[in-house]
Amino acid sequence: MCQNINDERNHDNQIKVVSTFSDLINTNFHGNINALCWKRNLIGDFKEIVSQLQLKENITEISVEDLLGLQLSEKGIAARDIILNDIQLLTDLGASPSFNLLKNYERDDEFDFISTDVYSFHVDRSPVGTDTFLCTYYGAASDIIPNNQVTQKILIPEIREKLQELHDGNEEDFKTFLQENFFDLHYQPNSDAQPVNLGTGHLWRLAVDHPEQKVLPCVHRAPIENEGEYRLLLIC
Image 1 (tube, rainbow, N blue to C red):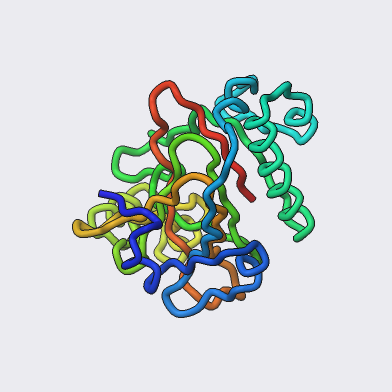
Image 2: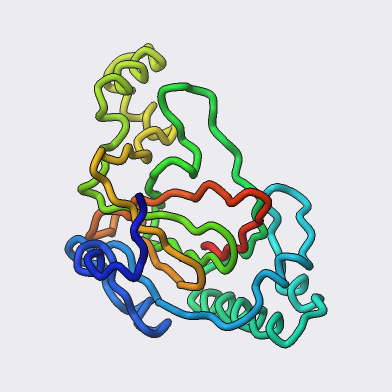
């Protein structure tokens, strides 16, 4: 069962809520806090934008030019202005935001004992200092989960044993094998875990695993999409 951002019990643990974009980018992660949320109640018709965009692939990147070419109502224009402003804010920050119309992500069904797709709880990793920014404007929203409520999948004995069989090599190369195949990035929720749904309209900044990071990376997952409904997602 997922909690939501309005549940204040979570805010002192993993999440810090801020009220401006400046606070979002200038607030440091610390202690258990590895997720920052610019909480917003957006006004505008984002469904209208979804209805006018053309899905070319399961994940279709939408350009600024595509957005500007839409013929929208007053509420649709308000929604577009919000998206364009968010893209500009992140671009000015030096990020490379990707705005997507999304039907679904590719599933990983190669192994029946471990999944490494984005529907599995996972962390992002980067060789350089960076953060993940994320906003769902329409459709199902992602979940995050406190680090003390998950177990790294490669540490679960039955999974680790099968991975060792799959590797079929010496122990010294096993760690490299786990990293190269991204097995070490994925986590299993504990039986009493309480994920937090990120909701729509809020702009999030999530901690990433990189050499300069001073907190644990934020464990998150993509949602199962609502049937017959596309997602409108900004991510970088």
